[in-house]
Image 1 (cartoon, rainbow, N blue to C red):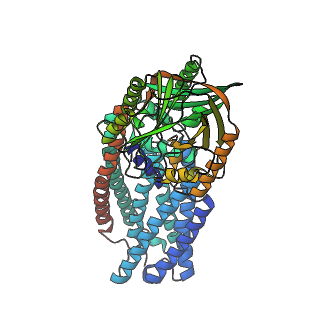
Image 2 (cartoon, rainbow, N blue to C red):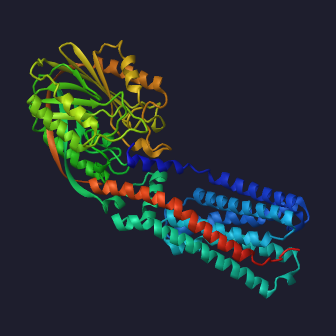
Amino acid sequence: MSSMSSVAGLSKYIKTLPRTRTSMILIVVLSFLTGIIYYLINSSYSLSNNLFLEGCCTFMIFGVSSILSGSLNQYGVKVLHGINLKIKHSMFLSLTSMFFLCFVLICAGAISSIFHMDLYANSLLFGCVIIYGFNTLVLWSTTKIGFTKSAIIGLIQPILILSMLVLLLFLWSDPSVFTTPLIISIIIKTVIGCIIFILAIYAFISIAASPLEKNLNIGMLDLLSLFIMHMNEGSNLLESTFATMGEPIDTLVTFVSFKGANGIKSLFISPSVHPGPLGNIGGSNMPTILANKFDYFTMVAHGPSTHDFNPISTSEIDKIESCVKEGLDEIEYTKNATKFKRYSHNAANIGVQFFNKGMVILSTLAPNGSDDIEFGVGLTMMTQSISKCDVKDSVIVDCHNSFTPESGEVLPGNPEVFDLIDVIDKIESNNEKYENIKVGCCHDKMETLDKHEGIGESGLKVMVIEVASQRTAYVLFDSNNMEIGFRQEIIDATKDLDIDEIEVMTTDTHTVNTLSRGYNPVGIEKRPEITEYIIKSIKKAIDDLEDVEVGTGTKKIKNLYTFGPKNSTELISTISSVVAVSKIIAPVLLITALFIIFIWIFYGNLHIIG
């Protein structure tokens, strides 16, 4: 499993939050129930001597304050030109913070009941310090307003809660209890507790963020906030962060063009550019974006490339388009093509078909699991097949159709590389007979399926190629890989159709990876429905068959800005190390800080009530 998609798997922690109304109702119910529960377990140290009034008082202190803070937090971030914090996010943050506070208060109530102590005020102060730190951390890491402004806005909820408590006590209690020493004590305990906690949070973030800053000059919190913004709103601002670490590369795009009576009927493209990293960032939707730049049926297959070759922005796809269109002007067409033929050696399986002066190699390691074929490996396959078969162009396609969570990239030195090289040596190019060619196409967007089933924007594209009465179906899903075993199910399900050969491919689009899974291969769900789409599309493509001429081409893409082989690896390894180190540093720093705050606040009891 690729490291980039492992990191993409972190998106499972970004859920669709409840609506504002739902959060507000939960705030009202939770605050009211907290008051009742506290009264039932510790009525001796409650705010009132009535069960219903205790619930109402706690609602006023916690509930009303949290609802107000939800609105004020969102407004404050908006005024400061922050991002991500819509009203539903802000209200959910207030709900979560209040939940922590309610939990602390109920625990303190249980301890008070057992040991006959009045811990209400101190536990409330302790809880307010916790939610202050939590609010500050969330705002700082997601809204791009900076530490100082986040720390100020983070004060809103605890200040409102403490102010509401003081107001109720002033109205219902003897005002003489509010002595100057008591007020000063409350202020000192709260302020120092907040300072201790906020310094611990600042130290944690500074330590965690330093590797990204040092290695790649990327702000960790900027990366996180823009990533969340992309997940929530589809924003591409994250590309600006990647631009600072991008580096230009030269790579290749190969293609096969089929020309009918009315011009180009079909175009089959295999760019050695990776459609990642995820969502709509960079080249993630490249198969659809590139295909839509042509006015005819276009299939964009997965060429040999890894996440190192992720474009840093969608605008880089224009360079691929320019190269293909330039190459199309140079193509020489003939009616010559050969039948589709399969070869295998150990783990490697390829399907080979010759077109005019070029050839197509559909490569798969199925039924074994596999991931991306590295560009260097693909380039070796290309040069070897050109030399072995005496052709001008070799279109290498990574079918990307057999996924397991343990699947790894095919990199130099892997045994699979030698299997792929050896299987190319088996190609019998001298004995191939060239015949006339027919092509039929079908495009189905599979509108009843979506990203949840691993289907991207382009859905399904099928091209049937007929040479000397042999019909071969090229089936391409706009998906990120295919669940292991599903390829064979599709092959078995289409045996009764009027075709002789079939190969199933995926584009490796990463638009489907914005869900809970870092990977989201097609075939996890609704296999029968997906198979039915294939059967219908193959039949339509057969009905669309017509005589064509064919030509192939290869063009170099220059100065394509991508993550780069060094930066991509370093980004993933750095993020992985940050996550690993944070699992150790965060508990140590925060628990130590909370322990010190606990000792500080509970050192002397504050008898506000009773």
